[in-house]
Image 1 (cartoon, rainbow, N blue to C red):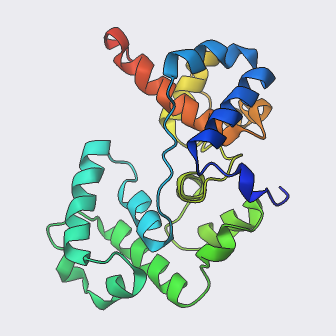
Image 2 (image 1 turned 90 degrees about the vertical axis):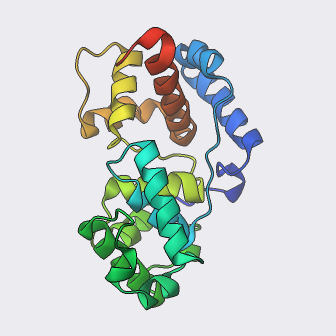
Length: 219
C-alpha cells in the first residue's frame, strides 16, 4: 500500500466519524450497525515501547486479566521504556503474571528499539507493508500484534486485524455466514471496506460488544 496522508490517520474522533460516514456510503448495510453502536470509540493509545508492550501483555487474555497484569507491570517498571526494562532482570517481574514467552518478546522488542532495528518514528510514516515487516521481524511479534499496534498506536486507517477472533465472529454475524471465517477469508470479506478498514474494525469490535451483551446473546 502507498503512503497514507497523516490527516487520514485515526487519531481524532472527527476523523473516525468522517470515515464511518464514508464507510456507510460505500457499504449501506453498515448504516444500521453504525446507528446501533454510536458512539464508536476511537481507542487511540500512546505508542512506542509502552504501547507495544501493553499489546503483547494483553495477547490471549481477557480484558480484565490483561489490565491487572499491566497494572502490576507498570508498578514494577515505573517509567515504561525499553532501557528501563533491560535494566531489570526477570526476577523483578516475579508475581506480575508475565509468561516466559511474553517476557522474552518484551526483551526482544527493547533490544530492537535500542539497536535501532525497530524505529517507531519510521513505522508512523512508512507504507503499511513495510511497517508490518519491521514489526514482525522481531521474535514473538506476529501479524495480529503488529496490526493492532498499527491500528491503535499509529491510527493507520486501513487495517483490519483479521486474526482477532471477535472480529471474525462479528463479521460472520453481519454477513450471514454459517461458520466463523478463517483469517484469509475474513481479509477477503472485508476488502470491500478499504480504504476505511480501520474504522470498520472499530465499528465491528463495538458491534460485537453490543450484540454479546444484548439480552444475553452470545455469538
